[in-house]
Amino acid sequence: MATRNSKTIIVTAMSIVTFTLILFAGSVQGLEEKSIEFDKQLNLINKPPLKSFKTQHGYIIDCIDIYKQLAFDHPLLKNHTIQMKPKTIPKENGRDEEASSTKLYKSPINMPKNIKCPAGSVPIKRATRKDLLIAESFKSMGLNYQTNTTQHTNIVDPKGHYFAVVVYRDHVYGASSRINIWKPNIKDGQLSIGTTWVVTGPKEDTNSIQAGWAVHKLLSPSDATLYTFWTGDGYQKTGCYNVLCPGFVQVSTQIALGQVLTPSTHNGAQTDMLISIYLDRPTGNWWLMYEKEPVGYWPKDIIPRLGEGATAVSWGGEIYSPVGTVSPAMGSGELPNQGFGKSAYIMRIKVDKDYNHPQFLDPKKDSLSTLVTQPKCYNAQYGFQAAAAWGYYSFFGGPENCLL
Image 1 (cartoon, rainbow, N blue to C red):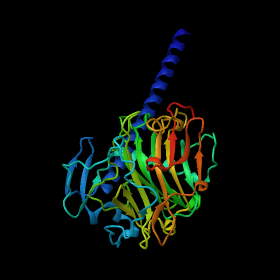
Image 2: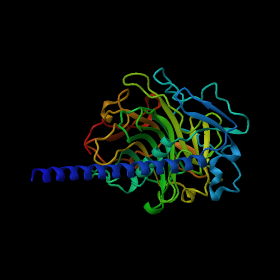
Image 3: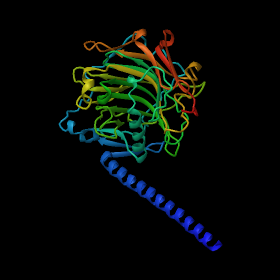
Image 4: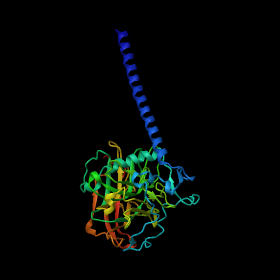
């Protein structure tokens, strides 16, 4: 009897080991298949460079022929004529842009002096497997359409996406603001961003553009980087992070999407960046401006609904965390009531309302509202301050390790 029990135990143990090995083999095979698929994607994304530079942060900047960049792999852009600069740049009215220049502020981004691309080429950050994984997180976030959400809710999002933003709901042709940059604490697989988002269309056919800073951790520390994300069909077939798929046309020789940004420090030096997204009249293309530098544009063909303008804008923070995990920090990791130097801010919030006279103006106060999907963890608030040229502003954010 003892022998039979011993044999039973041995057989059971061997079965468990065999089952575990099968699962492990399947997992390894799955990882290998994903790696192969990623490598195929990277071969299509990374175009042959005219010159390459390795930055101090470890990533590579490739100088790509402006006419051979990935954007023109898009079937709608095969015969596209590059727009080298915007025909219109909205005027900055209302507050003096230089009025807030103090020792608290410093430039968050600069192309390293040793990087100078040959004439006729543009700097593009070389894509890696990590970038493709980050893109998957962004696609997960994009499926939650902000403007269809109630103003304050504690409902758990099955996709793990939460935000605390200030929203402007009216027809606009652009938006501009200075976004405070931070490097919040996050865990593996999590994402935290500070962003401006313009959007139009129904949920199933959303056209939207986001731009700001993003921090993502994938098994190693990650920096705050300049990011964009867009969709032209409600995140069904399109949903593109930076320049990982055809669409965005880069023209700047000074700024590359994905570049590392200098973050702010608590009670210390604050860094922010002027981000403007607007419709260029009469071309119908949507341009991205970093400070006063035109970085590039999204052609009207790939975001057709935005050709008539956006119907909502939001400014603030968003996070993504796998369901069942504790939350990452948003913004600086502080709630908005801590104020300047501690809480993340977005100031000089402006909108471009007049099609015939492009200019960024203060929104009407009663047109702004807050939208917070998990107020027990994060929050946002807004106000107006004429001093130091802040204009309309928002503080946003919240601490890590809040149980979602």
